[in-house]
Length: 443
Ligand SMILES: [Zn+2]
Ligand SMILES: [Zn+2]
Image (cartoon, rainbow, N blue to C red):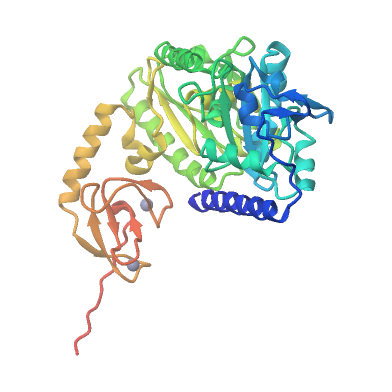
């Protein structure tokens, strides 16, 4: 990840350098006029002109090829899109933004986007821009593009800077447009601080009023799927799940860490179910697959391996749930309590640390488990020799050289206690250690 960001920064620097070089080569630049006049017309000194026009250009490109005067942006909410065709996340984001833009434009004539390209050459720019329905700074105007990159301190792309019509200043400029679009879609409009506060407030309220029904059901569906032994789907009413502890399992068959975690989760799920049956009270636990599979066939074959429930493939609530819980990566196990409120979004980590003992995943239970772990760790040897590693491993904890890690044996996350190689960083869960005796030979 850091590497990718570095590449982008380096690439931007590369492009800035290219821009500088091209500028020097290009001795034929139009003369800079100092009198504020352009072709006999006075340039508007409004804020958008200062930002987006230059001394010899008062227009922007439009998809039809026509020139659009910068002054036509006055009074509009304007997004500056910094992107480049050579970077895949830009292509993904642009595709998403096109849908949002078209939806917004039908209701809001006072909205516009301007593309500020970091493409490597004119052909690449044309190729990328031809899909975009919004305006653009002409590719050849390196000076303006450079000064916008500098003004908004663009460090990575894609970057979407949202400007308010009232005034272009730091207080009203939103720099995290990309994140807002991913998180709220068209809802983020008009991208003002007030609107963001409303959205945060609505999210807080939604979280407070969260129930299993309003999480999983919608106007068209009040059930989730179950699977018979013959692979047929049956419907289970969501109402019948109310009062249970529910795990929402965000996962997909194409994701390798998911397919590694799923068998572990199945074994833990079956043990929890069995313990609850033996206990015989009203408590119950269920898991619902929230699949990110790419087609019905992959969904069917992945879900076929699982003993629990599922949202139908491609259901619109899947996106809403991912947004609601701010899912950053899969696999992810969100735990909902019997009251319909979120207990934790770190169910996967708790399963890795404590297996079936993690149930019911509550804060009190986790504190109790942590204490237990602490006590057990007291009896652990401080140095072990582990099968498959030629250095000795030292017992470390959060406060003493340790911290969150990925176990080199089971490939899962860990925190708190670990056995760590001080020489090469190799780290293993205490439960994953298989000790070997090291024979020390005499001289
Ligand atoms: Zn492990
Ligand atoms: Zn080592």
